[in-house]
Image (cartoon, rainbow, N blue to C red):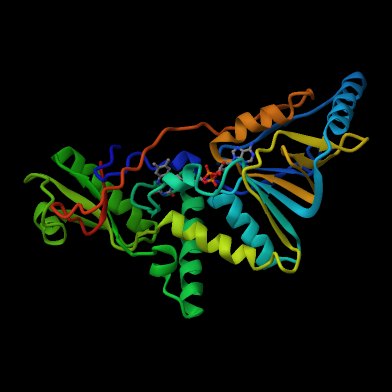
Length: 333
Ligand SMILES: Cc1cc2nc3c(=O)[nH]c(=O)nc-3n(C[C@H](O)[C@H](O)[C@H](O)COP(=O)(O)OP(=O)(O)OC[C@H]3O[C@@H](n4cnc5c(N)ncnc54)[C@H](O)[C@@H]3O)c2cc1C
């Protein structure tokens, strides 16, 4: 599916499906991996000689560095939209203290490149990502409502707009697929319409799709501004810093895990800090999660399959693009 808009390839494969904690594995007991929807494989059986080797390596790492140490209940690695949202949820929904650590700064990863479509038009009911996308949309809607309830304007704060979404087709074959899409999405409970070329002209006068063309239209899809949303979440998280429940460690790439004498993971290592966690370490480093985890466990015999694959995308932002005005976000079928 190509994109007709100026941003290319929204990356559905990088949607994140939750936090996984492996309760059975001592080594990774506290490591939660926030990853893609396809599942996790943790294979961690160690022989005793390998355990000794691993503990020696950990001991060497511990003794060769002396960075400042800080301790939190939860250490979240990665300050993209996922890491910051996890931190926010922990701060507002519990009494836990949280550190967020990032190799750079928020929005330096995919979050800063995303065009912020909260879209269902290109999703398939019943597919692996459907429930996740529906839940995500519900949570964003609730977030925007909460902001409104507090007397602020979600459009101002998050760039939140009900733009609606258009999936555009030009041939009769594409229109048949778009009609099927409308039926599927309607059955799944969403408001979806099939627009003929004439209907489409009414809402998007400058768009030319030919006589046979048209679009699937979801009037209730949204778009937000990822950078504004991140800035707001960051600002809210920082309110907990005064009670000692929140710490930010930016420009601090996590380079290793620190383990106690019995091999349990208890901290992450950055160039300047050892960040200890009493309850959990969450890895939410987006497309870097696979390579980071492989790196972090390189001295053990743990085998991990982290099904996160980087995918390239670009967002082209143009100022004063007045000659071609669109009223909705759109993609080409
Ligand atoms: C061009 C483009 C358009 C997109 N459009 C949409 C869209 O319209 N709608 C939609 O839902 N999704 C869209 N996406 C996908 C969406 O942007 C991502 O799914 C989302 O931003 C991922 O957030 P994240 O927090 O998991 O990862 P990221 O934002 O990539 O954050 C990961 C963070 O981890 C940090 N990190 C990496 N390694 C380390 C380390 N060793 N130590 C510490 N920190 C580390 C990085 O610095 C980074 O800040 C788009 C993506 C792209 C590229």
